[in-house]
Amino acid sequence: MSASPVLEGSACLCEAPEPVSHRWNNFSKGSRWSPDGSVALAVSDDAMVRLYKVPDDPSGQNSSGPTPTGADPAALKPYVEVAEGGPVLDFCFFPGFTQGCPASCCFITSSQDHPIHLRDALEGSLRNSYRPYNQVDEVCHAFSLCFSADGSKILGGFPQYIRVFDLQRPGRQVEDWLLSTKKGRGQKGIIGAVAASPDRPGLYAAGSYNRSICLYQQGNRGKPVAHLADNGKDHAMGGVTQLMFSGEWLLLSGHRQDGFIRAWDLRMAGDREQEALLHRFPRPAYTHQRFSFGVQDDLLTTGDDSGNILLYSLSSLQEVGRIAGAHSRPCVAAELRPGSQASPGQGLLLSSSGSRHFPDYDVDSPEPSRSPSPQQV
Image 1 (cartoon, one colour):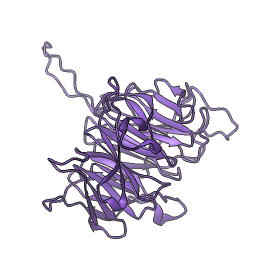
Image 2: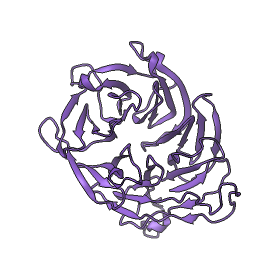
Image 3: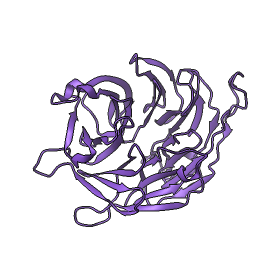
């Protein structure tokens, strides 16, 4: 994980090296800023959640001073490390997160075969657990998470279900939204992304690994109000891994095994699914990883599977900059610090990279094969 100024060819200012882990093949799975920009959260394949405090001026210069080039990046060390019970599938900060209000400093995580956990972002302690039960009354895990716009509800994505939890009432879910049945119509597959509209309370978007996006109203309990699809012959959508509302009518979607981030104009959403597609932003992500993006004002930031960081304008729909070769591995997350000036050359960008690497065994070698150490990966 690293933090860099938004400028082509810029130097990395802070870097968190791969932490010591019991897994020899550990790697970063994603990172995210808190809503107020005071905390950075990163997850890795060893089921650990790590929180970092990034200084306002990590370069050690004032805002008018030059950005150092050629200098070694400052080391970032986590102030909290939390072990989840299994691989972390998704995480989300409380939307009202403010460092000056300790009660609001919290986040939720979902890990394989475990309940949803609400944790304190200052100490890492567990505040509450929310146990999802499936249709045969077994505890299951959420593949995706989001808070409602006011932070009072937690929504989790499951195979063919969205389940709703009351933040103030830990335990079992309070609502089950059945999205489809085996023989019926509706949104099928694992719900890999859910998002709440901050400007239209009660409006949610859900995307599935089955390559579909639907809009839902809270009172409809799983009946979609609109379907979104990209039916272009050469632009088939991959499984949906991230959704984000930007403004009142714009929805952005990220996909795995896909070459684009898609922008949808929800004013055009209706019976004709294709009409809502506004633009495709090139973003090569042809792996099964979850590549995330961030939006700050007019600027869309994301990474690709070659380790580049890409910057796009949502108004002009054009690329406005990039940091080529920012990482040697796939860049799975790139997000501008909240409150930063959203323009190329300004602000602080948080990014993380990583991918699973396997030993390259030489079957013709007379020497016995050895697994690489963590330092060699």
